Amino acid sequence: MSCSSGQNGIQKDMSLAKFGLFDQTEPPRRSTGRLVMHSVAMFGREFCYAVEAAYVTPVLLSVGLPRRLYSVVWLISPILGFMLQPVVGSASDHCKSRWGKRRPYILTLGIMMLLGMALYLNGDAVVSALIPKPSKKLTTWAVTITMLGVALFDFAADFIDGPIKAYLFDVCSHQDKERGLHCHALFTGFGGAFGYLLGAIDWGHLELGRLLGTEFQVMFFFSSLVLTTCLIIHLCSIPEAPLCDNQEDGMPQHSQRDPLLMQNGGCDYGSLDRAKNVHMKTEQTDLATAKLGEGKENTKEPTQNKMAMKSLLKALMSMPSHYRYLCVSHLIGWTAFLSNMLFFTDFMGQIVYHGDPYAPHDSTSFLIYERGVEVGCWGLCINSVSSSLYSYFQKVLLSYVGLKGLYIMGYLLFGLGTGFIGLFPNVYSTLVLCSLFGVMSSTLYTVPFNLIAEYHQEEEKQQDVGMASSGGRGKGIDCAALTCMVQLAQILVGVGLGFLVTSAGSVVVVVIAASTVALFGCCFVALFVRCVE
Image (tube, rainbow, N blue to C red; front, side, top):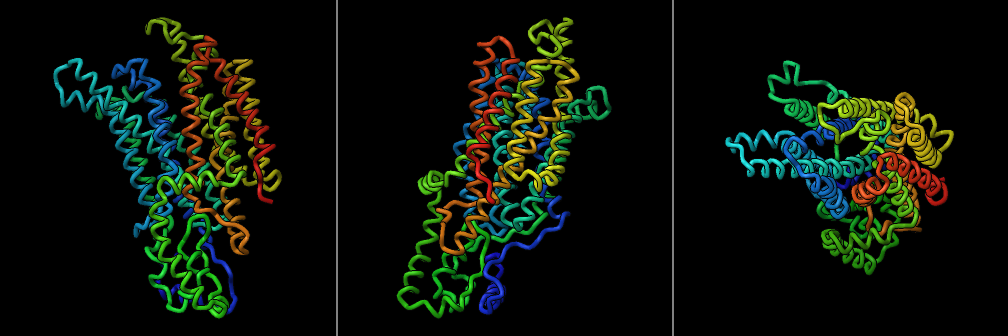
């Protein structure tokens, strides 16, 4: 029950509590249609991600980006994200917008994604229009704007996942959280598949390409249209109650004597909004306890406002061990997954097809390499489709192997599949084994967040009997902590894999490394990640 539902709603809940009809309330069950509407944001996000994966390298090459700046482009966003993600998660926990806690941040990050795509897909055209005479200054401005666009898009696209997940957790019951996460994984896979398919079309020879100018403008048109539509549907999917400014606003006078209600009724993050039995507590509360409760109430708001850095870091450091182990396993999984995905098309061109990316562009070796890259894109499309299909079958497998079993299976299949690809590179076997990439992708997008939901549900039950406290953490911070592991994995991959490839002299070492890390992660999950019984 939302704390902003008004005095009549609160009085009704207190009347129910008075007669012992319930001790705790949670959001109502959501229809499948509402969960689908909520999930389309993941379709738009992954669609734009796929477009970036297909076009960002050609765009960077077309504006003349020096090779020494490649690592800078890929490291700016994850470094900023790793530092700022928990801050944004905490800020959304205490956002008092009348539109809700999460949706203002989702809208802002969506606009930033659109702006980033506009800059990196149209930066060269914009600079050319503003500076008609070709010059070195034009190239410098084009490179700068394109780099800014890539960094801004990656930053916003990485950030938006946390508020979307927290939004789902806030407005759904525990059963609907699981259904919603599976819908998220399903639409994530479909979004990636459609994005890769759209990128595989040669728009330069079609009427739309000639109308808009270049294929980059065509991709921006489709990407902005899809993302805008998906965001509008997502933001209108499920109503989100705003966080009240003061617990006493709209509260019946006699309820102010209940310090327990004061502490739990303010929509603190980390638990569902509760309706407590006020009648029994009021009879047992004396005047001194009431004054103490009022003192705590008066100091609660400044404490929430200070939840920026010091309190935030303290909350993260005091995170229970099972949360930290889950974050570490998430870091290992994303490190393995990104290691393989970022270099997969290059692996297909060089190792599977035996092409040469450094050969002259009109040579046979380079054309063979390009063919390998194209086939690699189809492999990534297979990965996206299999991710969607596996997210559906996860619901069936869950009843047999449980969340931890799904977690272990995802890492194990990915580790074995990438290892086989690295040791025995072949076109057809590689494309078939790309389906295992989708198993890992679906696992990373669903299982850790399902575990977070179970951990929070367990904490809520313990808080009801006075056995535990959330320690100032909430769903936003915990989802942000998981998302931070994605950014940290990007940093590790960006810094380490270039050195690894240079030392080994072949990109095959990347696939073998991804397999090794995934198998290590499988063992880590089996030994340390806890599943709520």
